[in-house]
Image (cartoon, rainbow, N blue to C red; front, side, top):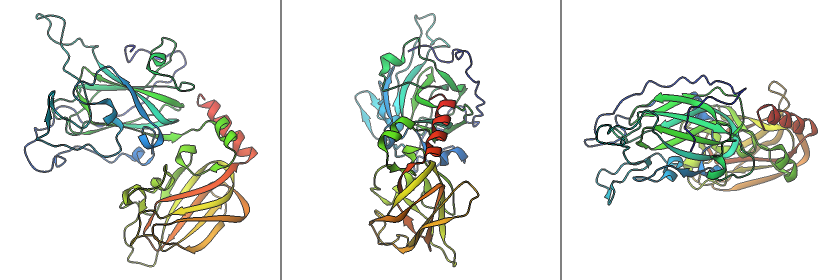
Length: 386
């Protein structure tokens, strides 16, 4: 692969990328909970969609080296696990991506060169604008990289590693070469307002990274959505997003617009038990202005803790009045509820209110973009490099 951290092509924006101050090794593991001394912080951008989630369609399509641990582990959905007694023919088995130790060219120069590095190529599950990256070195305590960098590109179609390595591919730096710490969630805010499809993660000079998370906003292909006609105008894969919620104690509200059906409670949205007479809610932005014709509310896997009732509303603009699509309706546990609206409704934002609390796994709003909505999405797609 080309050397990382070369100057961007003319016209590329320079990132402003503050990093958390996690540097150096972590203490060796002794006994007990391996996460007890894990270093992390509250990262506001981590509430956005993980564009590198495998369930969204992401994949780690190539790596320069993966001698000790496979590149595919980088984007696994679950947090990395650590089994202190698990060894194999190549040594300690780690849940992450780990490369062999680099060496210099001869006995007089046994150290790797400053530019030596390992790399992994990630295809995002959906094209989008990246707002933050987490390079998680969980359980890599003295064998993590000294530094990392992250670059991104926007490519048409489905290119393979060889095509992405071509000199004509333009890579933009999202995270410049930055020291990172072992056994830590190294978080980087990104301010590069462009649409990307692929990332290149570089580690200097070698080592192990448990997980890579790439948080941002999906920016779908307007041509694809136009060809579909009717689709879920709220799904994160189509550019919908959560703007706010009353509670995300057990799991985030963003799960309600995730891919597929929930397979377990933690894949949906569940609030804490209310001890007052209030209720919980989630507010969303649609892909763009759309005409909604049908609603689905799924309580999959919530059996004794499903929301009791729910209503769904739509409005035009961030401050417009709410129009009720679905009045307060009784929900059944572990059930997908489908409602065809008596008349289509147009809006840009949606809201679900649940009474009084509990769990909802998915909310789907089926419809199509209006002429104005389609034009706005096409313009945003063009402006951000689509």
